[in-house]
Image 1 (cartoon, rainbow, N blue to C red):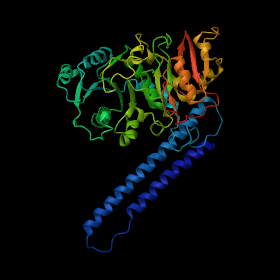
Image 2: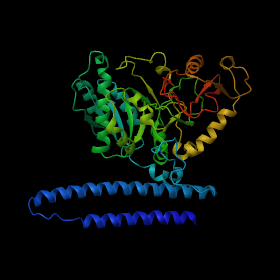
Image 3: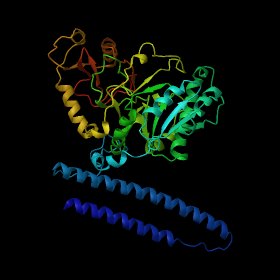
Image 4: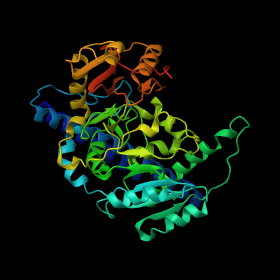
Amino acid sequence: MKRRTVIIVVVATFLMWNCVTYYFLVNKPQGRSAVGAGSQLESRLQDLQNEIQLELSQNSELLRRLHQYKRKIVSHQIDGGEKNIAPGEGNIGNGPDSPVVLPVDFEASKDSLFNVPIPVLVFACNRITVNRNLDQLIKYRPSAQRFPIIVTQDCGHAETEKVILSYGDKVTLIKHPDLSDIPLSFKEKKFQGYYKIARHYKWAISQVFHKFNYNAVIIVEDDLDISPDFFEYFSATYPLLHSDPSLWCVSAWNDNGKSGMVSNEPELLYRTDFFPGLGWMLEKSTWLELEPKWPKTFWDDWMRHPDQRKDRSCIRPEISRTTTFGKIGVSKGQFFEKHLKFIQLNQQFVPFTTMDISYLLKEKYDEIFVKKVYESPLLTVQQIRNNEESKYTTVRVQYSDKVGFKALAKQLGIMEDLKSGVPRAGYRGIVSFMSNGRRVFFAPPPTWDKYDVTWN
């Protein structure tokens, strides 16, 4: 009864506010002088437009909060809970802008979302081997209508453009209009390529959402191989991305996905606080948030900063659905020989759209995952490397500070770098991987509550 009363009061307040606003707008006092009437009328119309836009924005926010409150009530009724929930309760993080977890729409909407058109945006420059990526995309996509391919080319490389155009109407080519160098200081000139990439990304993603008017996009680069179930993976995870505001991307990449460090379970999926990239999906609503403040360079590390991430996570697979064959590029092969070329590409088709992956919704995932991690027996790195205590199939190694993380990560063979305190493939500070055929959780103490942004 109390819940119904609260909803009625909120709706009544909403309607009364609109009525009062309308009254004052319509009955605004008229100017006494006829001098400059045209100018006054134009000014008044502009004021009226601004006020209406402000009211629409405020009303939209009020409706959003009302819907959130109603969904939370429904969620608790479904779960059989009797706890009264105040508006705003259940936020992630501490700030007022923290996203609210509302997973209750997932089951109801996932079937219809399986058919939403999602273009694949391929970033190209001067690699004529772009055909290798395009051939795979065309081969594995289940529908040209569901997954149109848009190739966006920078650099103005004629031979690469010729390869792209050879695909005819199987792909759509768009070309970045600004090929000029970016004015940079002497010290920054060596980063010219990274500046151009960031500029290209902003322009091309904006084209997808504003010119082509899609609601989501899968972003790949011209040096990626893809798995046979690449499109199945993104089809199944799109409803998750759409339904759970604590998610802001889905990635095909596992940063620690080397052969021998992943299990033979290609159906396993995880949440990660680290933005992986290398074949990833985002929604238009997220882009509208990022676009106005898009960086001039190093866009991927910028995405990993707390100001952008806002405590949100991505979905990533146990076994990567992409690998890179681009040894030569702007990064000049950084990490390729030591790491990237060893990433295992999934070769089995997993029918994700027929499977229940709702366990990845935050409220479910956190409870199950955290419990599993901290119930695992605690071993030392040496015990892990020597495969001691082999009776345990799941074990844990603990770190407590940045120096300890980097030293132990190196010994364990996983990626050592941190971005704003977040380890690659980590979730709540926990990195999951395989060693000697068993699951290892490289984790902070159970008292962990947030990332230390000074860990870099």
